Each structure stands twice: as structure tokens, then as C-alpha cells.
Length: 189
View 1 (cartoon, rainbow, N blue to C red):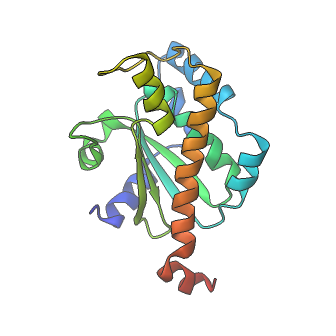
View 2 (cartoon, rainbow, N blue to C red; view 1 turned 45 degrees about the vertical axis):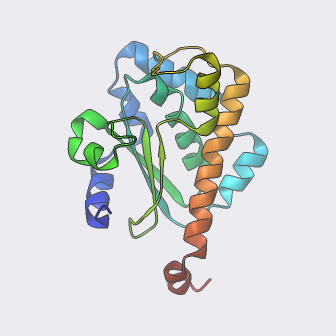
View 3 (tube, helix red, strand yellow; view 1 turned 45 degrees about the horizontal axis):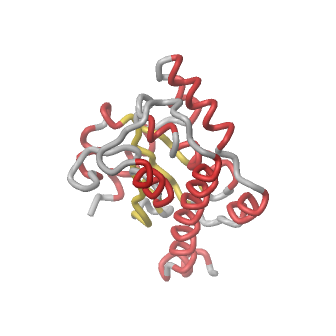
């Protein structure tokens, strides 16, 4: 269990999506911008995200140099922009090893790792390093370790499926927060 005070402190140190992407190399910034243009929600998804009213801080551990981050994290930003209760902030994994070591996946320092938190900074969900759709697509192309370069091509159907995976993860976390006995008592709902 990670102490909520530690997560709150890390959240306060983290930056906005725009500021986070700006620290990357220029060619990486272009890859992030190009993929963010493809990551927007379709109207039904935007409507669903607009219903995420419970406060959910989201802490993203990433790397601007990472191709998987380029192809995953813009979905988090798109959902956070559409969801009034969400605020997403971003940290570089290599600059925050104290957090990265606490959120290792499969025994490794993987990125991205997305921590979906409730308003008390309790963990609702830990997502990453790839969504199910992304893993399926990679497995179909090749089995084994893979880390595509920023700007590597991603088929439209994979983009759509990955976008839906991320939205499903956030919907699940939001419903967990909405159904929380502690939070329902606090908010009278």
C-alpha cells in the first residue's frame, strides 16, 4: 500500500500535460502532438467522461522518450479534459525513482503507469504499461519485448480500441469512487 500523503505530495510536484510534453526533445514533442490529435474522444465517449463527477486525481508516471507513452498517455489527457472530476498530472519516471520503484509492473520500471486516485489520494486503480487492446495488437505483430519509437505508426482500429480501454478503466475507477461508502457518506449521495 502506498501512503496517500506520499501520492498527494507527488501529485503536487507533477505538471500539466502540456508542460510535461514540452520537456521532451523536439522530435518527441512532435510525435506527442501528432498522436494527441488522434486521441480525442468520439461524442459518446465524451458524454460518458463528462459524467465522471467524483473528484479523481490521476498521476501518470511516464517518459517523453517512450513510444508506448506517446501511444497511451494522450488518451489519459483526452479523458481528463472531458471529465469534470478528473485532474491528470504527469511525472517523468527517471526523475522520481522513489515513486517509480513503488509502482513497478511485472517486476520492472515500466511506463506509462497511471494511478487513478480518489479525492483522499487512495488508489482506485493502477493501469499500464499498455492497455489490453495495445497488448493484443503487439502480440499479433510479435511476441516478446517491444518498445516502439515515438511516432511509430499505429493503425486506426488499434487507436479506437485503446481509447476505449482507457475510457473503460476510468469509468470503472469513477464508479468505484461513486459507490464508495466513505465518499457517498461524505457527499450525501
